Image (tube, rainbow, N blue to C red; front, side, top):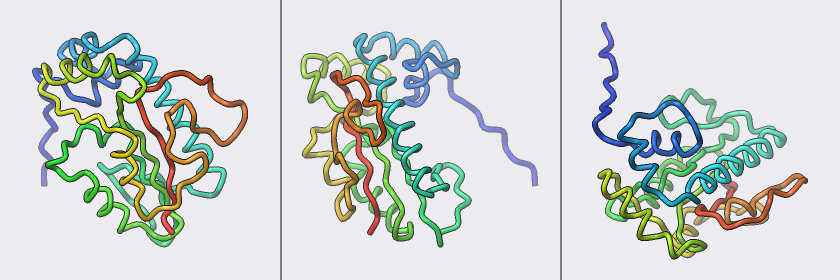
Length: 195
């Protein structure tokens, strides 16, 4: 059976490619660059700080023996051992009508005890003056965006044991020294353990 080649629609921006552009990557197209360029200058730093959170959280989990990280697109896992479900800079692209909390619960329900949720979520809580510019840039690119407040991000961790320091801004989450530079962030970040 022959596989159909995947066709990438380069006429429409995609959030992952916009994020790649914000991080200085090369896997993006002019349409993605256009959306990224319309975002506030702070977006590049927020994306970099978010990526640093992901690296810190993954290193901390790996040091504790978690060696399976779930890539939603292609998962081959041993569900008898802990798994880290990584939802980095993803759920803010799901509007409330798509029930992102239920989707997260469904994914977590398949994981064994001792697994973890590693989540970062876009917010304007520390940048309220930039909220409209960010929303407008994504809307012009026809990319749904639902930045959430801390109270709206907390339910993603319902039923989980939050790892210290809890749900904090991406620049505040760390386990090992040296501590990251404290600065304003466009992301909440947290790690929760499946009991």
